[in-house]
Image 1 (tube, rainbow, N blue to C red):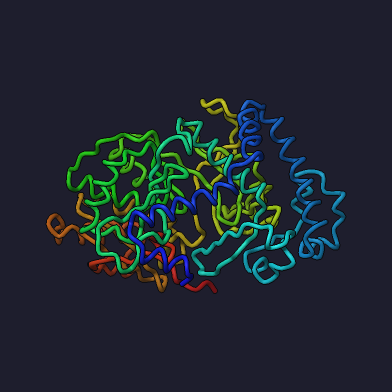
Image 2: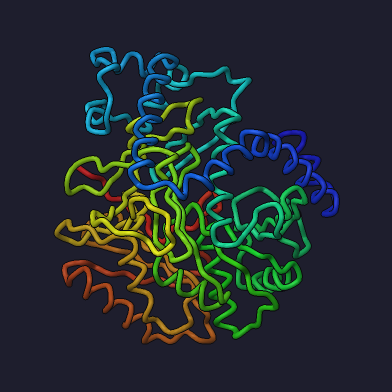
Length: 457
């Protein structure tokens, strides 16, 4: 524990709010500067470009970025040593470059990075495999990424820094020794109330809702499952909210159809999905008509191979730690049909963001059931389920842990749920249902619906 964390943990709440705000102002210096405002203006203009103009811009940015990585990163210079970089002129040429993955980047990180550590901004990423990666970003790229994120939100009516927002994340804001029921701290720098995702228990939920009603945020963002936990509690207890947000912006976790419907039903506003990553992947954002658009100004997405929806990413805002044809471990379903979205922005459409490649369960014969389909198996359970998690250690067995509202849950719901799973996975799969008092979150504060521990081999 560092000295600042010790001071924070033993300070009164009002001083903790000051410390959170000071930290917020410090982060703002790396996010909001000249480059941010120039890029915001550019993105507003870019929205009005034709698809052909955007593709031409993307191709030019791609060639420039590859040359930058080759000239400045010893790692890329080495793995491209047998390739004539000057002959990479199109997206098709680009596919001749080798694929890199997280382990390659991690093992060679000192040769991958292009800037001194003292000049960079550290970003940490984990993932379902548990492997961590620390990348360095430039201040200019950080501002461009923030500009893209704020532009996405502005399209649907929310102006970051000008309007209040509530954020559910895994930040350390509640000291272990705290005895009070204030599980949130205020970041004045961005008009942001930060809510802890680690303390969302049945006992504490009412305090969160009271705080939200008092704060009245114009937007809610952060961990998808944490927001679903709040919405689930409100609906189960038929509670009233004293505010209606402009929008909800989930991050970090794969969106499910049932979760989206729950949030929109309870908060009476639309949910807008997005895709990026802490290591700096390009953006996919949802427009006001809830269509997912690839943001061509931010990079290139491609499938690893025909018929495999796992993606490779190349991000133009990773000059500190270049990511080129990077196997990020996520999957997307691209829409191959040419269509014009009603929002007026011309760009390729993504049918669905399927999330982490391990966000699925196996059937006994080895078929994969993705996370969205697994989540749907719980939708017919009456309104008495607090939280659920599925764990698979072998292909012919699935364990289901349930947190339930004991006043509403009935034994026959277990039978209903088991039948739902058997119908999807087949009778050769052993379904084990266990009721628990609490399903723990990951160290990051995120909640995982699926934990797939089956070894591939």
